[in-house]
Amino acid sequence: MFEVLKVDHIGIAVKDLEQAKKFYTEVLGMKAMGEEVVEQQKVKVCFIPSGDSEVELLESTAPDGPIAKFIEKNGEGIQHIALRVDNIENALADLKEKGVRLIDEKPRYGAGGASIAFVHPKATGGILLELSERK
Ligand SMILES: C[C@@H](C(=O)O)C(=O)SCCNC(=O)CCNC(=O)[C@H](O)C(C)(C)COP(=O)(O)OP(=O)(O)OC[C@H]1O[C@@H](n2cnc3c(N)ncnc32)[C@H](O)[C@@H]1OP(=O)(O)O
Ligand SMILES: [Co+2]
Image (cartoon, rainbow, N blue to C red; front, top):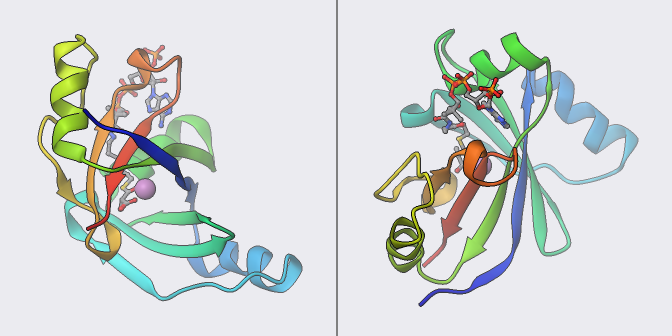
């Protein structure tokens, strides 16, 4: 059993994190949190909270990383949507049982210490879906 709790964040692929951040902070007047490099995903990220959810800006740290590949193919823009779940182990077991195509069968390290796993866009109607649990 698991439950989806909320939209955790919207992941936006950008070429230049500093530059992209300015739109949210200077134009929209939002407050950016600190940056973090997540080596496993080959990204540098910055979260910008909005109410109970966040915008996640992602800049690639390597030319073969998922964000670099996404931008090469599609240009900058929304790369994934993350839903917060109450129990990611249960969620993955449940989706697997339902035959849903998973990218990660086991939780991986996510920014800020979250446990995350990705579901393939072919299984969701075209959206790369991140599941995220925070203890
Ligand atoms: C730090 C962390 C956090 O929040 O804590 C993060 O967010 S890390 C965020 C960055 N990390 C990740 O994205 C990790 C998970 N992503 C991946 O494993 C990969 O990017 C895949 C999603 C499997 C795509 O891989 P790759 O680009 O090699 O595959 P591909 O180009 O052959 O794409 C296969 C099909 O999926 C589609 N496709 C690919 N990426 C997509 C995306 N982001 N959104 C929607 N559709 C997408 C392609 O158009 C293609 O469809 P057609 O066949 O119809 O043309
Ligand atoms: Co994310």
